[in-house]
Amino acid sequence: MRLSQSRICTLAILAFLVANGAGCSLVGKVRAKNELNEAAKSYKEGHFEDAEQHAKRALSLDPTNRTALIFVARIIHQQYKPGVDSPENMQRGRDAIEAYKQVLQNDPKNDEAYKAISVLYSAVKDENNLRAWITARATDATQTNERRAEAYAILAGKDWDCSFKITEQSDGPKNYYVELQGPDGAGPTILVLRTPDQKICKNRLHIDVNATDRSQDEEVERILALGATRADIGQGEQSWVVLADPEGNEFCVLQSRVEPHRT
Image: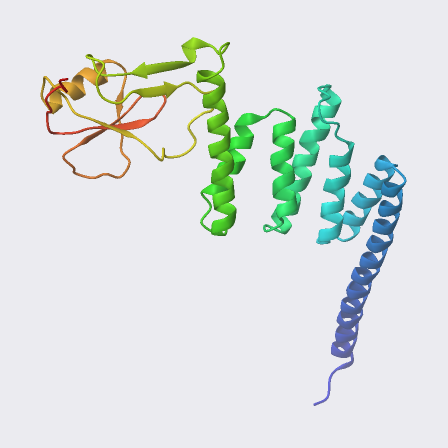
């Protein structure tokens, strides 16, 4: 098959462009590696700002370089000083969080980045984002059972600590909890704690209640008048009625009426 002169020229130009692009990509990777070497050298010498600039240049030359991504995050993290609440230092902590999040976008299973973000949220006293961050892993079905269990254990530990500080310490604020008990003092006691955290997922425990002196419909109307709202959690048509308190915590009013407990 014979090709025209114009077609040969076109193919030659395309071949040149492909080769040139591949060459530029290779050169970029080599330059990025050199910048990372300089970043490592500056980091070891304690010149963190220079190290950060070298690492960022490496990242601009090779945006998919995972080593460059984690290096940028580590260097910014190193410049954050725990316990120093100056605006500049707190911003450094937040910058490190964002840098580690970029690492996770490129490498979702990077556990160093995940744990560093948890540490930094705690260090900058951002409890709401810390709890949301850990809860996201605990409820992520794509994570291993081991990692999800670890996240749930951390959440449990935080809740226990909060409960201990509120209920056990002698100087704790007494208006942070309400104790619920039967009118005659019999039966179990329920301690409802106030916490600064917002509800961010379905509660793993809820309360079922029975009326003792009225019908289910009357009890529901009474509770609604106190500020509750009807809730739809996908229960469909059931004999019980799902309600939620003003903060969104669900509970159920059962159909049957029970006699008050007598001692």
